[in-house]
Amino acid sequence: MNFYSKIFAVAGLGLGLGMNPGTANAAILDYNLALTGNLNGAVHVEGMTFVGGNLVSTQLSEFNHKDKTPEGSFDGLEVAGNVSGQMKIMQGETAVYGTKDASAQIFCDGSVNCTTGGVNLSAKKIALSNEMASLTSNYQGLAANAAAAKSDKKIKLQYTGTDALAIFSVNAADIFFQNSEIDLDMGKAVQVVINVLGNATVTNTNLTGNWNYSNTLWNFYTATTVNFGSMAVKGSVLAANADVFNATGFDGSLYARSYTNDSLREVHGFFWPQPQVDPHTSVPEPSILVLLLAGLGMLGLGQLRRRQ
Image 1 (cartoon, rainbow, N blue to C red):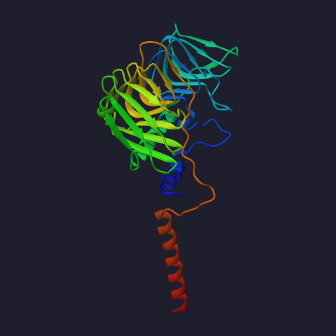
Image 2 (image 1 turned 60 degrees about the horizontal axis):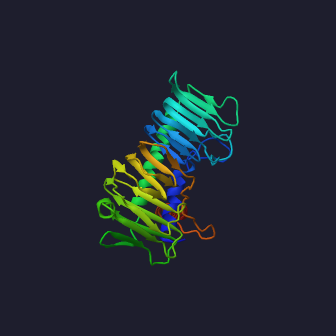
Image 3 (image 1 turned 90 degrees about the vertical axis):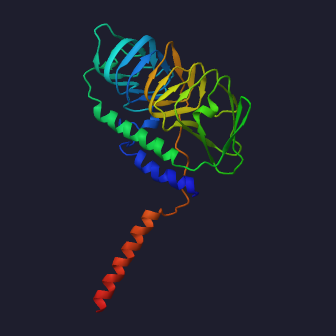
């Protein structure tokens, strides 16, 4: 098991808490769209959605649009606060919420009655918020093993190593500027984390090259505002403390504080997976080694006392 695999093995133990197979306790990465705050605008989300604040649908929104909600007793839409506007729950899925405006309309596609109101989701909101914060911190803490090269308005994110996980560390202002082009070359890497420092305001930025939507994660670890403008986002976005705005669409999942758009946007069902860990290799972590040594020390002390 390499260094990064060990990091994620430990992180995975914490991030998986509360996620037991066969139960309805979904972890953050099971969601296609997860917000700890409000959703304002209109969306077509192919998988499962969690809104920790209020949902204001300004046009007809559709949830579980492509039936990518996990199998089992899961809800295609969960809203901790108030629901208003028009929306449709697709593919026979269900929706739960706290309160609903009298004028709100929730249509059920594939079922007769798909909604349940008066549901308290405060505990789930806290759990998902904590999980999101842990996730962004874990990725931010990894040392970069790849670099960005800039030539005029073109930025090349190129990985030349042999690890399965490529990690870039960039400043938002250095890559998101007027008419910039960002090209990704993953090389031999299987997955890519792009750690982004600072707030982002995108103006006519294009993403070019061979982007792997499911295996790319943008981690805006310090941002409080991310405005994608007219950019088509490729890969999943993690912005735990940020209010996210616009984008022409997301080829990946979105995890943020809130999301606002000015017209209908699609969130496609490309899900960021935890990096794989080799199940055949086991390397004790330093903390485990300390416990083992302490235990051996106690056993030795016991033997010594018995001899005396």
